[in-house]
Image (cartoon, one colour):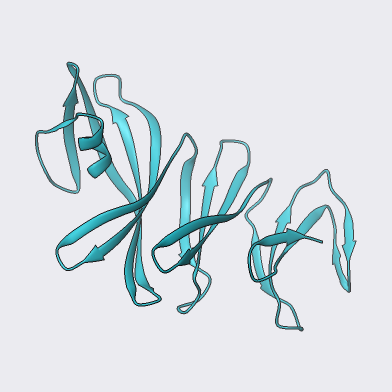
Length: 177
């Protein structure tokens, strides 16, 4: 909601869906997805909201925001705008410092993974796929994300990937091998 104030919007009503006005136009901003959790002692809330032109009834962007919650205060740490539609947002595990977001572009998926370290947010993977990704833990204990793309065919180590790509977590980012 703070990005609205930054853009000069004026709040007209408040609920889970609220209406704002700017330069004579009306928009509806609605919360689509939310994830909250403790990351290294900080309460982080990750929201995906959709902004819609109320008069035209057209959704024109989604906003992914990472917020720190301190008591009653909410501080936006990072904010990303997208034209893609959100499908899912989740942590890899309760203790994982990574947040996976899955988006649809209409004809494909977009997988974006973010690393949270303290109050710092960094994108560690942004890749497209023709189908929903598979998150796997290999027998070696390595964390990996299988991204299926029909135009690729690879064999990686002992894992046979037909028309796909496997991204391994190396401690800093995901790398295709």
